[in-house]
Amino acid sequence: MKMHFLGGGIEIMKILAIHNFHRKGSASGDDQVFKSETTLLEEHGHEVIRYTVANDEFDKSGFIGKVAATFGMLWSFKNYKRVKKLVESEKPDIVHIHTFFPLLSPSVLYAAKRAGAKVVATLHDTRFICPCATSLRGTELCNQCGDGNYLRMCKYGCFKGSKLQSFIIACIFTSSSVSQNLKYYNAFADILDGEGYCASPFIDGSSRVIFSTDIEDNKRFSDFGDYFEDVVAIHQIIVTGENGAENPYSQRTFAYNGCLIDNYKPMMNSGNWLSDVKSESNILHAVISPNNYGLKVGDTIKQTFYNENGSVCLDVKIVGMMKNGAKLFGATSDNDEISADNESTDKMTVEMLFLNYYSDVAGKPAFVYNLDELEQYGISYITEQRMLIPFRDNLTEDEISQAKEALDNFTIGAIPFTQIKKDTFSEIRKQLIVLIPIIIGLLILIIVSILSFTAITTHKRLKNYGVLYLCGGRWKQCAFINFTVIVIDLILSVFLTYFVMQSMKLIGLLDNTVVMFTLNECLICLGISVIIMIVSLIMPLVIIGGTQPREILKNNE
Image 1 (cartoon, rainbow, N blue to C red):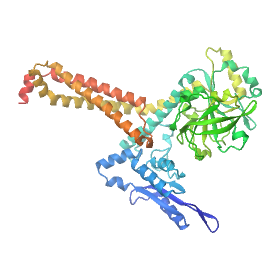
Image 2: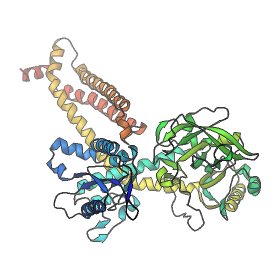
Image 3: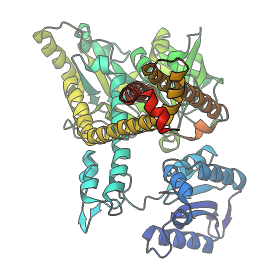
Image 4: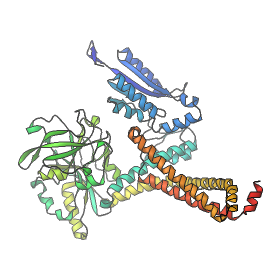
């Protein structure tokens, strides 16, 4: 819809308002805000399209519907599809999302954004930092879950007064946090296991210069260059349009060295990450975030870069497109300034080095370049934000002291790797303390279930084993029949799961969810399968070993 103006210059817009109502009769503030705000917008001439659901739908649904709705709290395929279709057909000027928990789920945010709409959201509560959305316990302010120990919810029954429901919510929040911390630590485990520091470039006036291609800026630091390995950092380059003209592709540049490219891959929408691309003559490769320029994977644009000889104009080939909001090392807004006042050494985990990059929030897309390719053409760059500076192996205490002195002259807020590692694993340990009892409980439940299932199926097949014995089979060897059946079932389950996953991937269903089946999940499934096979072998031997074929046949006559 084309926007037009009323007298006085007021823009008239088409607005899609989305909200998850509470139960009928609930005096909910966000429900009242949604009703009042949409009515007020209409009274001022705006066109408002409402897309709403209510929690009463959950109460009216049957058992299967309730189970589906429970899983839909994580990702609602139904609402994702409906919102995406609505945005594509109505083409609103803006989508305003209010409450999306529990029935709409975060899927509506992705649906609106992927359909090309501009999206804003109103946070009516504190659910993003408090699973109960109130930050209250009774009538008192409570932020105890802020340290990641969500098990306190079970103690107080914070979620709807139920300790069981609080326990389930705590599991979801805690497992997600542990997974994130491990993911980012593992990317740089080899570096962080050694000696070194995490630091930010020293600011001299308005410039941030360290490790740049300007020799004068690094003259003092170069005397200590033998003490350091390759620095893992974000580098910024100055890019203009073709032949120095104003750049039609305004961008936030990230130049990563080989270590960072090889160890970390952001969430991708399409194409390849830089580590999967082969170098080409007179071509730079870039992975970009979603943009309003119409750039897509496979496009090539002309860009001018500054170097020691003045400038060089090169083709930039777009080889990959990241997801909007993908985590990037050192991704901050251009307005963020680093100073001694805002550097905090109280706590530093590896995850804190990565931030989400949203093109619409930053005002420009991210362009990630390969630093090794830039250096082939002598392209100038400066280093900014936090960086990992590893020391070389086998340095003496005096050399480490001199290296630290060199860093003090060029950086601020230096934090040793040992502290980062300690803080990261301290955070993980606190969360694992919550998960360990849960894991043990689930493991016991799985083992008891397997034992019960195997015992029942073995007893049901005893008559068949007796007949097999009369036909010449050895009695105790009949136990291996049960084992063989279980193994065949597991193999068929694996093939069926693989077929379903690939089918969903081909038709695009997996593109609409953040659920991932990684190596960790595969290992967990493999471990459970091994337990099932062992029990299915031992349990029949125990049961069959305590009976005689004649007794079985006589009891089943």
